[in-house]
Image 1: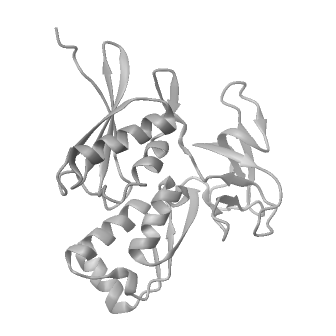
Image 2: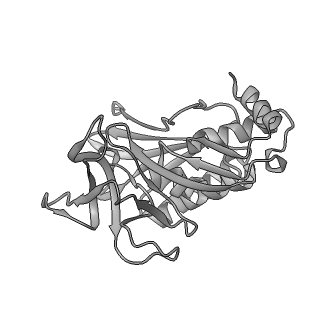
Length: 265
């Protein structure tokens, strides 16, 4: 089924809830626009997103909500342990289901486990009869906090959701950067339809390059580059391309690419 056919099915069935990756929610909105359909006026009222950090990235979540006319929530988990978290009405993080899971945060420097703080999320779930796990390293980088949420819950909250995969973090000129940090900036620009980020190694030095789909041309690309430099403290060359140039994704997006480039002599 194509994206346009899925949009037609949503309208025909008067669906009220959509569950997919954040990337695909925006793809459906794009497909709807191409068909002349205003999905924001449909019966959809809630969207639930998994597989990527986007639903906990304010700029991405706001775009989904605006284009689809929904209230969006994050839903975290892993194949190996099952679904373990959800965002509440406060939508400033993800609550872990501590009735089913024992969660720990593994410090990336010391290797010590704690019940909050920055590090890798480690999960124990003895209630999953088919596949119980003990201290399973999820590979997800999080910031866990304790205390009472505005919604009233007191379970461990992953502030800002899952930041990304531990091995996704790159260091550019001494600055640690997650792909989600780039997305949080790029998605603030409504003129950007799609984007791609490359980590290019030249003469053993890493540099970031970003390609944005936009009708805004060089002026918009410069604004994006300035925002990345201002917010992250790194320089990123941003190049504009015409809408429809970059690939689209039905599942998890692959917008972050690493490659090596031979230095020119």
